[in-house]
Length: 417
Image (cartoon, rainbow, N blue to C red; front, top):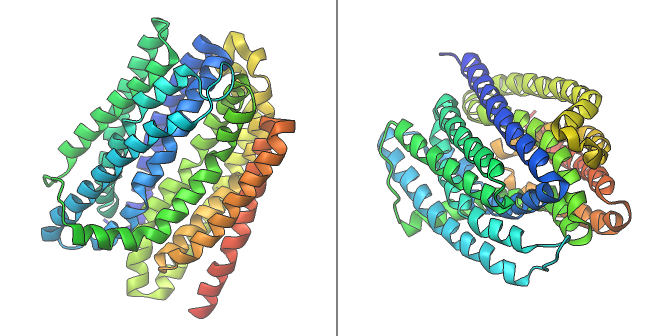
C-alpha cells in the first residue's frame, strides 16, 4: 500500500469517524440543549471545560516522541508499556489535582462553579484516565496508520455515551450525571482499543525510560498546555465573570466550531509519519508532500469557513428547537468563530512542520505569548461585551499565532535550500 493511499485512507477514515462521533456529540448536545436549556447546558459546558484542561496535561505530547521510537516490533511492547505506565501515573495525579482545585474556585448560584458543576467535575475527572489510555493506544495506531481501529473503538464508546445521556435526560436527572455517561463511554473505548491491538500491552515502570520520554516531549507538552489554556480561557473567564446562560449560549456555538477543527488534526496525524519517512529518504520528496498538504488544508479551510458562516442560523435554531430564542446570540458567536478557521488550519500545519524538523522548542515562546494575549484580551473585553468578545478574541489570537509560526517555518525552509 503506497504512502498516498495510506494517507488518503487514514485521513478519510478519521474524517468519517469524526463525522460519526461528531453526529453523536451533536445528538447529545441536541438532547441536553432542549431538555436543560441555556442554564443547564451552561453548567455542562463548565464541567467539560474544566476537565478538558487536564486531558492535554496527561497527553503532554508524548505520542510525537513515541511514534519515532516505534520501529522494531520487539521493542514496541516495552515502549508502549512505559508510555502507558507513565500516563496512568500522571492521570491519577491529575485527577487528585482537579478535585482538590474545587476547594479554591468560587461557588455561586448562576455564576461560577455551582454545586451541580462541582459534582459533575468530580465524576467527569475519571475521563482524564480513560482519555490518557486511549491516547496511548492511538500512538500505535498512528505509527502503523491503522486509524480504522481507533475510529471503531471511539465510535462504540460514543454510542454508549449517547444512550446513557439520553436516558439521564429522559429521567430528568441532574446535568452532572451526564458526565458519568462520558466516563462509561470512555471505559468501553479503552476496552475495545486494547482488544484491537495486535500485541498485549501492560503498563511498565522503567523510570529511566520515563525520564527520557518526559524531557523529549517537554517542549511540545508545554506548547500543547499553553495552546489549550488560551483555547479554553474564554469559557473559563465567562464562567467566572458572566452568567451561566451566556456560558451555555457560547458553548453551543463553540460545539459546532470545535467540531470543524478536527480536520487539520486528523490530516496532520496521518501526514506526520509520512513527513518523517520522506524527510529521512529525500528532502525533495518531503517538500513535494509538504506543499500539497498545505494546499489541501488552505482550500478545505476556506470551504468549511464559508459553509459554517452561511449555515450558522440554521444550525443554532434547529439544535435549540423550542428554546431557539434563548440561544439566539449563538449565531453571531459562531459566525465570528468561523472566520478564525483558516488560521487554525494553517497554524496546525506549521506546528507539525516544525515538529518534524525537531524545532519544538520554538513553539513554547510562541504559544506562551499567544496565551497571554488571549487571557488579557478576554479579561478586558468579556466583562463588557460577553461571549461576542470571547469569539473575537479567539480570531485575533489565532491570527497572531499563525504570523508567529511563519517566522521559524520560513527560517527552516531557507536554511535547508
